[in-house]
Image 1 (cartoon, rainbow, N blue to C red):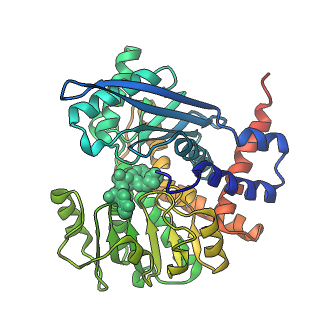
Image 2: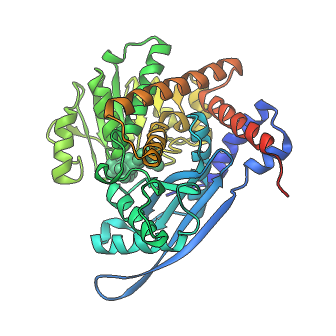
Length: 416
Ligand code: NAD
C-alpha cells in the first residue's frame, strides 16, 4: 500500500527524532528499532473455479515488552512486509501512548478481497491462522480488524484458533461480533477516539467544535464513525471521499443518510446530498479539521501546500509523510498524530480482552466512559510533553511511548 518509499523508514525517521530529544540510551535505541519477530507464510487455497492459488501472509510482532503483541490484520493487494512491520511498530507506540499493557503486532495477506467469494475469504483466513497458530494466543499475540477485515473475519480466526487448541478461546482476537464475546462500543471506538481528540484539540486551540467544518477522507470503519460522531457533537461535515468518489456540500452532509446510502451501494459515490469531489480537492478545502481515514502516504510533499485545515486528526495509520509533516508543523497546523488520534480502537480492544478474560461484560456506557478517560489522559500526556520539549505532537507522542517502553525494557533487563 506504500505509495512511494519505505513506510518502515518513515517510522524510523519519526522514532529517531524523538529518541534524540529524549537522549535515549544507544542500546535501547538499537532494540527498539528492530522487529522482534517477522513471520511469512504461504497459504494455498482452492478457489471456487477449482484452481489452487497460493497467497502470501505476514504476521509481525514488533515488540512485546509491555505485553502480548496487539494489532490488526489487513487484506489488500499492496500489502508488503515493510508496511506490516511499520504498522506493527506503530502499534507498539500506540499501546504505550494509550497506556494499555500490550506490545505491537500487525498482520496482512496479499490478496484482493473484492474479487474473492465469501467461501474463498473464509478458507484463506482459516489457512492463514493455521499457519501462524503457534505464534498467536491471548498471552502471545491478539489480532484485530484492519483494512478489509471485519467482525466476521475475526469470528473465523477465533473459531480456527479454538479448534486447534481444543477449547473456546475468545480472548485470542478482538473486534469479534458482540454475540460471541465482542465488546459493545468496539466497532465505533477508533472513530470515537478521533472525535474525542479532535474535540480536545479544539478546546486547546480555543475554537468552538460546534461551528467547525470538517472534511473526511475514507468512509469505512474509522472515517464513517468519525464523521458521524463529530457531526453529533455539532461539527459540520462538508466533504467525504472513498475509493470510488466523494461528496461535497458547504452546508453540511447528512451523515446518517450517507450511512444508509452506503449500506445499499457499498460506496458514497453518487450520494444525492451534494456535488461530487475527489481527494485532491478534499485536501485543499478551507476547513477547520481534516480527517485522513483511509490509507498511508496521502498528505505528501506534493499536496501539502494545498492544505488549509487548522487541525489534522490522523484517523488512518501513517497518512502524512515525514517531510509533509514538517511543513505542516512549520506552518502551525495542529496535527493529532495517528498513534494518539486512532488509539481508541486498541484501547477498546484491550477492554474486550479484559472482558473475555473475566467472562464478564460491561454495558456500552461503561466502555465509552472508560475510553473517554483513557483518550483524554493520552491527549493530555502528549500535549504536556510537546510543551515541555517544545516540539510537535507526533514527536511528543513518540517521546511518551519510547520512554514508557524503554523504562520497562531496562527494568526487565537483558536475557542472554
Ligand atoms: P476500512 O476498510 O473500513 O475503510 C477504508 C476506507 O478508505 C473505505 O471507505 C475506502 O473506500 C477508503 N479508501 C480506500 N482507498 C481510498 C482512496 N484512494 N481515497 C479515498 N478513500 C479511500 O478501513 P478502516 O478500518 O476504516 O481503516 C482505515 C485506516 O485507519 C487504516 O489506515 C487503518 O490502519 C487505520 N486504523 C483502523 C482502525 C480500526 O479500528 N479499524 C484502528 C486504527 C487505525
